[in-house]
Length: 377
Image (cartoon, rainbow, N blue to C red):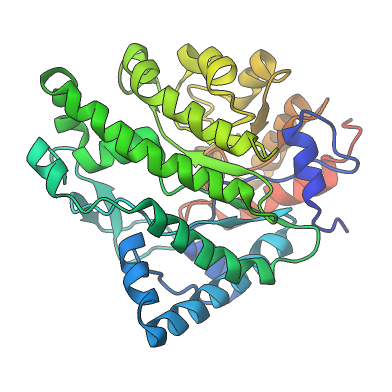
């Protein structure tokens, strides 16, 4: 039996072969997956930093929130530790609440009441007036909320495991979520000053959050989720991404590196045109999110596996629909191509979503334990 040991994952992030088997890495697991596999309930937590701050000012509400965070953390520790991960995900509510969302019925096997989608046609901030009136988070409050959560969860972390905080959205994501992708795209040309101010405001908060995260002893690495692409390329031009987004991602990576921790970028989409900049300029240590139909992890391993770690990559469509007997052989092939030499962690191409087949997800982890032993054969 392989016990959790963060050194296993850290070896992969350092482009080394772990001493025993390929580690596991996933961005997060949906609530429905965690509850099904643990038999425990995860309770909803406050949506925004601002709402947590209000709770912390009331001793009764602060006590209730503390118990909620403690309960949820215990469930997550059982989930990740029980399945063989070497870390526990850690996140806080968003500093950037917004109202431009859409609800839709969920059709996943482990369905939730509603799925939430971004309304790309409208934004919470579309104009300078909206920008001025928006309740921007205070940096001190963001740090206060992070430390409130961290001080609770650090006491619950098993020996040899670490936390990997996931930033509440990334630089590009939060700006486009707040503005709506359509108004944002128009503003790139009609009001570029507003767009730049948006990135500065969002970037500074995330930079501070990365800094305080990496400074914490029980944090092993920091992940930024910042989807920037579609299957055929980036969502906006590489020029705009390099001017507006990547400098803030770089500052976030540097804040993490200052404390000797790895910086992981999760970004969906075909970003081949940006990879050199992400590696050489931003300074990412690892890349997560891959899709066989457009940007398979096996190809990225060949191209960039000697410079950054590649994480996950087991295709979401195959996790959701491939017959189990074929799926096992597919996962073996991914391990065979990606694990030799180190710098790889096995996991889902995106996240452990509530629409994947549980049998396939569990089979993936089982294959990793049985066939991911070093040296890879």
